Image (cartoon, rainbow, N blue to C red; front, side, top):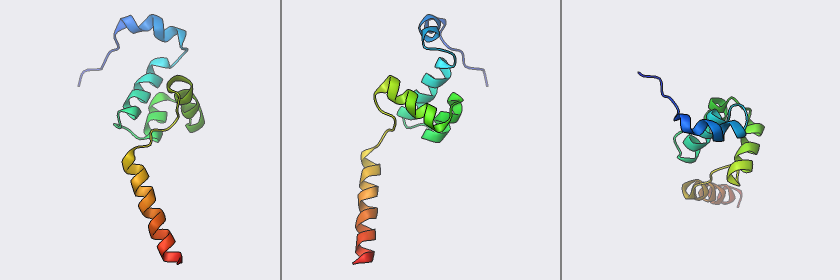
Length: 86
């Protein structure tokens, strides 16, 4: 499998964003596209949980992607738990 390369036109912009910017933005893009989990994206970016979360908020305005399906699953779980305690 060939090694992917980054378009060299990105280099000047990425340099202004600090060391590891290309890894971070690629990992963040994969996370936002729902291709990898938060933990996997943080690891791919070479960052810990807190640092990856902070940088997502810094560059994207939010730290986690919460999908409608996730919210619906949580609501169903809450209904189930409430029903068990009634």
